[in-house]
Image (tube, rainbow, N blue to C red; front, side):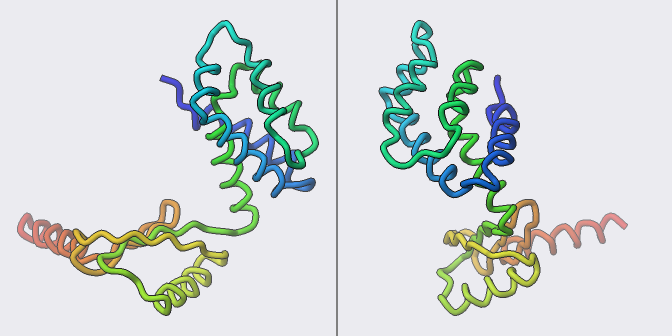
Length: 181
């Protein structure tokens, strides 16, 4: 099976390097629009049709772009089409966005809490995390009553499990290790 995330990585990296000093936000908006178009059922059906060249789909995408488009868009889409890689657009968008946010020191933080967090608590949490990671924080909060109490905070690979369930699990592990000694 093809790992689309892996295959999309060099395309996203090359595009980011190209767009970084020209129009990074315009490219982000354009990629988002291309993803919306490419996820339409008609486009997906056309993409799955082996007799239809992907170059014809490039024309469809370019015609659908009614707003201002970044310099090099046609070339970028043609490169993807020549390699039969238009299917990678959603993955390229995701990775391009991640690279742009990394360059701008913007971090997405996922918080899973047992209860809703007050605005005051969220503001304080953003301040603390902004200091810790020296970045602008974008907080995404989910409520999961199964946690019993507390919260789990995820920033990329970094995880802080302050939930009651996590604490009970650590206590059980600690007691098990002591019993084994």
